[in-house]
Amino acid sequence: MLGELMVNASSIIGIPPVPLPTTTQPLKTTPKPETEKCTCTCTVFVIVTVILAAINIGLTAYIIWLHRRGTGRQKRAYQESSCQNATENTHSLEMVNVGYQQPTPRNDSQGSQYAPLNPSTRSWEIPRDHVTIEKIIGKGAFGQVAKATADGLRGIPQKTLVAVKMLKVAAPDSDKKDLLSELEVMKTLKPHPHVIKLIGCVTQSEPVLVLIEYVPYGDLLGYLRKSRGLHDTYYKDPDIKPQTTLTSQQLMKFAWQIADGMKYLSSRSIIHRDLAARNVLVGEREICKVTDFGMARDVQQQNVYERKTKGRLPVKWTAYEALMYGTYTTKSDVWSFGVLLYEIFTIGGSPYPRMDDRKIANILQEGYRMPKPHHVDNELYKIMMSCWLKNPNARPTFLNLKDKLEKMENQHKRLINMDIYDNTQLYANVEDLGA
Image (cartoon, rainbow, N blue to C red; front, side, top):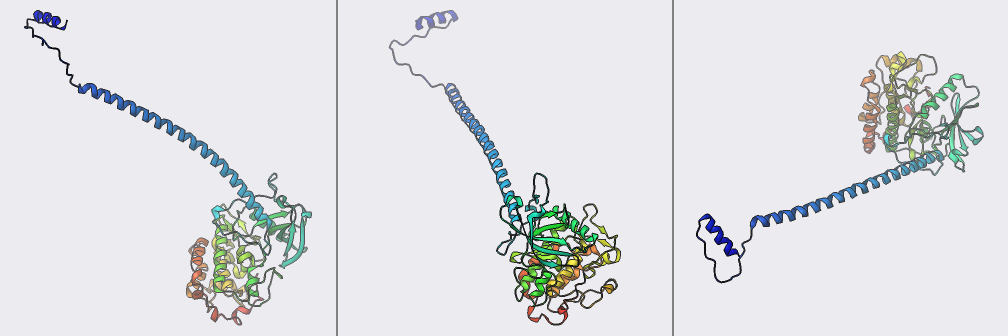
C-alpha cells in the first residue's frame, strides 16, 4: 500500500520512484528532541505548579495559625496584665510592717497608675470608722502623723498598717489647704520607689485624714541624728532604730535615691518647694521616699510658681530667687536638694549653723555659700555648689544629679571620709531647724 502511494506520487510530480527494499526489517526510529523537550518542560511545569500550590496552601495555613496564636497571646497578655495590676494595687495597699520588703526600684515608665480604692466611683475615700489610730508618732507645728490600721481596703479582710497625716485642733485654715493640696498632688502620681504612696483619705468629715504607706524608720533627719545619738525632732518612736553609725555608702545611697524621687516629680511638672531631710521618709531596707507635698504645686502650664501670699517659709532651704522674688521652678528644688545634701553628708547637721534666718537672703545676695565640710571631698562639694548657682538655668537637673551620685556610690570612702568627721563641733547644733 505504501509502495503504491509512493509510485503514484512519483508519477504525478515526475520523479522516478525509489524501489522499496524487498526484505522486511525493523524500523529504526530516531528520538525527536523537540518533542522530548516539550514533554520535560510540561512535566517540570506541573511539578513546579504543584510545589507552588503546596507552598501557598502551607503559607495560608501558617498565617491563619499565627493570627489565632497572636489573638490568644494578646488575650492572655491582657488577662495577665490585669491580674498583675490587681496584684500590684493590692500589694500597695497591704502596707509595710516590720518585715515588709520594698519592691525593687524600677524605671518611671514601668509604674502603673495608682487605682482609687473604689473603682466603681473612682474615689479614694475611706469610711472614717474603718481607720483606727494606734499612736501619734510625729508632730510638727500644726500637723501630726499617726500609726494606724485600716479595715477593708479593696476587700482585704485583714487590717492594713498605714500612716495617717492629720492636723492638730488649732491648725489654721492655710494648713488644711496645704494638706488637701498634698492629697490632690498625690492622687496624680504613679507608683515610684522613692516617692511616698497614697493609700486613701477621709475628707467627707472633720478632721481630714490622709492615709499613706507606713515607713518604720521615720524621717531622714531624725534617722541621721539618732545614728549619732542625738535627739530626734519629729518621729518620736519609729519601729526600727537607726544603726549606731551610718557608713559613707549609706549616705551616698540616700542622696541618689532622693534625687531619683525628685527626678520623677519634676518630670510631672511638680514643684515641691519644701524639700529637706525632714520631708524624706525612710522605709524598709533604708529606701528613701520624698514626702510632704503640702507646699507642692502642679505647674503643668508654665513650670513656674510665683508666691503671692504670706506664710511660713523654710528660709535656709529656699532658693535665692524664691527668697528675693517669690519665683519657684524645678531648679528652685535643685537648690533645696543641695542643702539636703549638706544635711546628709553632715549626718543631720543644720544648714547655715548659728545664722539668723533674716540674714540669709542678704548673705546669699553677696555671694556667700556654705563652706565645704572638711570630711567631704571636693568632687562632692562641687555638686553641692552647682545646686547653689545664682542662675537657676545653670543648675543641674535632677536626672543629671541622680546619675552622677549613683555612679559615685562605689567611691563613697574617698568622697566622704568618716574617719575625720567632726561629731562635736559644727554639726552638733541640732536645735536650729530653720523651718
